[in-house]
Amino acid sequence: MQYLDLKMDFMFKQLFGHPSRKSITMAFLNALLHRTGDDRIVDVQFENTELTKETEDGKTGRLDVIVRTNRGERIHVEIQIIPQYGMPERLLYYWARLFSSSLSKGERYDTLPPTIMIAILNYPLFPHETDRFHTVFHIREDEEQFLWSHHLEFHVLDLSQFMVKWKKYRRDVKQSPEWPWLMMLSAVDSRTKKIDEEMFRELEGVAMTEQEILEALEEWQNLSVDPENRYAYEMRLKWLLDQLSNIRGSREEGLKEGMEKKEREMIQKMLEKGMSVADIAHILDMTEEEVRIRCKL
Image (cartoon, rainbow, N blue to C red; front, top):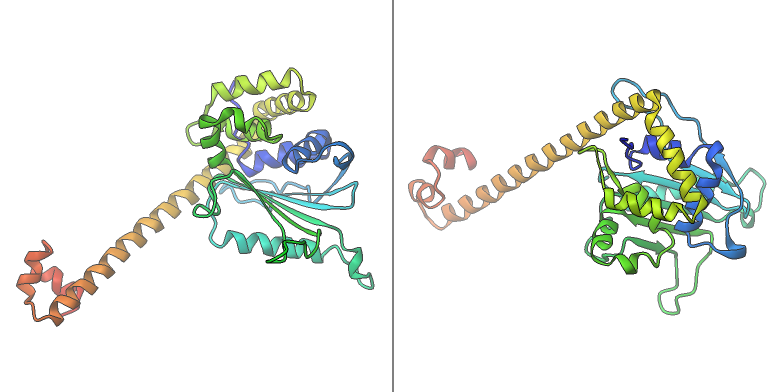
């Protein structure tokens, strides 16, 4: 059967942000946060779980997952497949809003709960700094590395880097508790509508011994065959693909503008050195008219 892509925020929230699937959400969060033993999350209360109905153009309300745990923490999970400008600042802003909204008028600051931001991305957020697929951030003192506060915690999971690591270093990847869940998010490509059969066989193998994975696979299958879900999914996918197309168009336009700017600068330097328009046109393989247009001569 054809499974719907869980990287789509609509499907992600359906599986991980619904009270009826709370056990899946807790297992997912415990794996991502590496929680074990007494540290495990054993209950969550969902916030902002209402799904806004999809419109014909695919626009919808916020599709993040926000929970409050039995430990008093607030956890905000966001999934993004389209690169967003200023994403580190955007995540910091969302964290700040969630953290500050926890304090009611008259309450003491020390009653604010630890607030955790989890960003699941299909692209590298810090491509020049790291090639790890799971990075964790806190505020620490520069020299002695002690925490400012345990109330702030950021997790960034890069699915594109996870795929690279999975193909090259599978044994190492399997040492991390989150790997089955990241496989679930990575196994389907919405653009090609294909499923990675090898990944799916691995998931089926894990499901034989891990009840939460089995439950998640069954719920994923049920959501994927539901006609109403499929329609909303297709509308959302169409909108996101249009967004990707617009981004690519803007990038190509930006590259074109950048090249033209460099050409103008080069022509200007040649003119300053006393070269004629005819000579510049010959060197740059342009017509004399194109040279004049570039520099508005």
